[in-house]
Length: 274
Image (cartoon, one colour):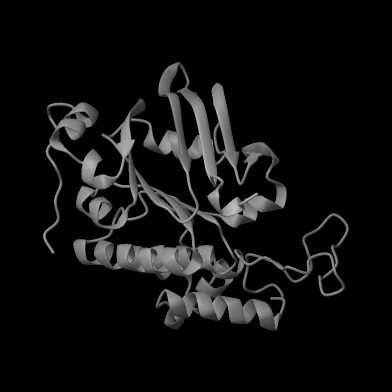
């Protein structure tokens, strides 16, 4: 069996309610390995709800979600192969954690439960592992090298000792990308990860994401409002307005007729000028 040809993500008949409101209705699609797929649609069309249901962050009432050929609830350690960057990374800006420590939380010890893994204290945390910098930071050369390489790759190594609460929006997005990069991932999900960036920052982030996708052979599912960037960088587009209106390659899907059917008559195409 050629696993390279099997879908990384398979969604069948997904229906999701938020309270009594049907936010997503009977949505089906697949993501093939190494592809970059954008979900577009008006505000309130169910894009974030769809992503959250796929990632098992909220329940769905009907349908099926499989990632890496398994039901999403049965992924086990394979869940570590998914990277997720939300639209808003909400945290207490006084929280005392450095950039390097945050990125290190995304690292997976491939020899876990071996003699190199620190013991667990009864009723406590894993020894040497903490969100707080004033606890013992477990020194592991492999981990430190992975953190350094990930931060170098996203041009954020100079921020490694900086508290995350002091980062700008663009810096934080690059650090979150390093978090996804520090251990091998197969699927990267971005929920409007470019929100809050200026035109130049968004273009730079898209370029970096595209480079990393090709280097790491990531499969990408992203929500975006920037149709010009979608047209330039994505392989496939899903037009969503509660249900899947249409899907296909950007050159065929991003037509005035399809955009009108997706967004309605009040839609005005948002364009950047670079």
